[in-house]
Image (cartoon, rainbow, N blue to C red; front, side, top):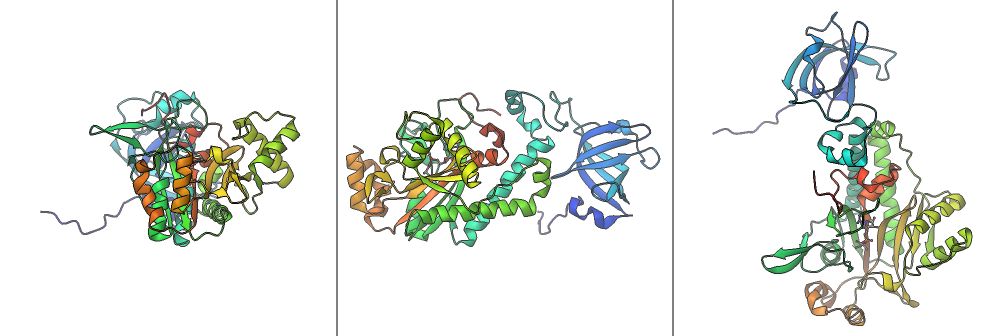
Length: 441
Ligand code: AMO
């Protein structure tokens, strides 16, 4: 029997520590990303877990033949750190020895080691396991990690409890036809459209909860904004005085995550040339006022009184950016007819709900609002909507046995990431996207 009781130390030198070793030899492991032959020497780019590090090969100091190295070979490298004022890092790595740990079977069918992967979206996604190795491609998901770490840390500091709700459920929470049906041992079940019911139930348990997890939407249309599986950042909080408490919490959460990126993800921000937006003051406008504003400014007839057309979201963002300098805008008081059955209506006007969306650079990234917490009120609304309350017995249990006023939101992680990076398709901010035409890789 073997007892594993020691932390195995990786031999790899961390990029951040290399400068402390000027004049010394270090060991690094990684993949050969690119070999650039020059006259009399070569630059060898080594892809380590986060950075692509430039190393110098020369017969003068390297104890191996350059031909030993192939792109995408995994190697262990011994190099000497040399002071070099002209280099951005202040040092150069002279390659001394190399141990080839493994070699690729074949050459990559697609060029992945240029500045960008220059190919169609289809190819980019078909070859995802290797196109993600491109320096810029992988930086996208490093930033996405930073966003999640920021959200998680902020919410934890605000005393939200992190939960994990089931993804196989007996009823859809969001209504509509975009729900995946499952044959669950001969019974009907569905893939969760959102953790809505569960996060509300958990407010009765912990008062403040959050979850960052996949949700499923059977979107039948092929658009640049819709995925069939996306990551939803959800939070829900009790004892709120107004739905605006939720909006306030979101502003702080976004600010916190962006600060996290600024502090710990400079490498990726520089690589992708990201300019972080300002979230210090986000304007808020009522849905109907926004509709009229767009209609007046752009001389458009309002066709849909219940929702925005995608074009209108873009136009509203343009107006707000011009007039208030903000790349974000809250839209509040969505029509009751357009919001799910759990949305609380405005006591002064039951045609409108105490709910909001957050638009960022022309796209809806968040939906949220206050919920009905009163049992009788919720039952009455379901009846009005011709819903069978018996199917929602376990959901209604919380209302029946007492709930505080509460509300929350759901933010689409991929949408937020893609807008932050000014991408034009949400798939670009999704590791392995699922859409109507794609379940692989
Ligand atoms: P909603 O259905 O509006 O609200 O979704 C919340 C946010 O999720 C993102 N989103 C999507 N992203 C990619 N592909 C999709 N198909 C997709 N659909 C939605 C959007 C959207 O703003 N339970 C409520 C939230 C709440 O009130 O707490 C809900 O799920 O960014």
